[in-house]
Image 1: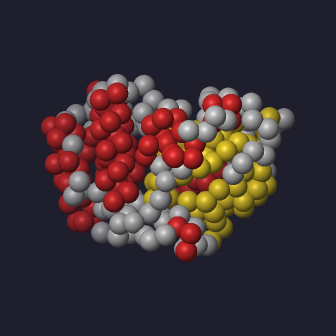
Image 2 (image 1 turned 60 degrees about the vertical axis):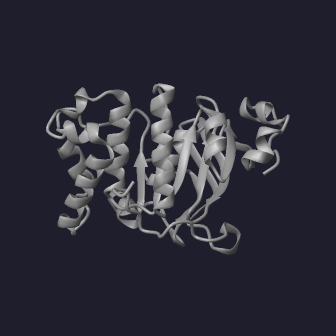
Length: 261
């Protein structure tokens, strides 16, 4: 997909030999008396795809919100490219190279497809290059090109998901975070979305994806973390987790607290 332009140059060598792009240590998020994340720690390396799986209410969306800066943690550290992110305004987080595609797609329904895409490039000064990238997305996703001057609210769910991912990429992120990108989509559309993510990764963009579909998450990720009750219950590669008899128990919160990581 030639329209996808990251800030890297493909896979970035071994994650074990490089400092992580994103590092989270002891992250705690509370909403009043409710603890959504309880001392969570994980890393995302340059060029990696990391997935977070778990049931509803596990704390997955709170994790992405804390990284993006839309939720203030009660404790812990988040560093991106070696610099702390907690307390930074959302615009600064985006400028530093983090883009979030939230659950529910969140297109601006009253604006056209083209206007939605232009909003993704508002932080950029290279307006001519951004315009060329928008045209590239229209070639990659012809349905968006056909409807460029139509209201984004008239797109199907899958088309809206393509739009919001393209819009996020126009900020030229180093790390793309997606919250339930396949939620409510037909299997064929989900396949298209995940093919798009593979191309994004090959363009040098690291990906942190939250998914309820554990099988899908395991297939796409270098490493998957099982989150339940705000705690990482297990983590590992597809080979390590898909054949692990404790995986289902961990997913549903039945594994002992502080399980293998």
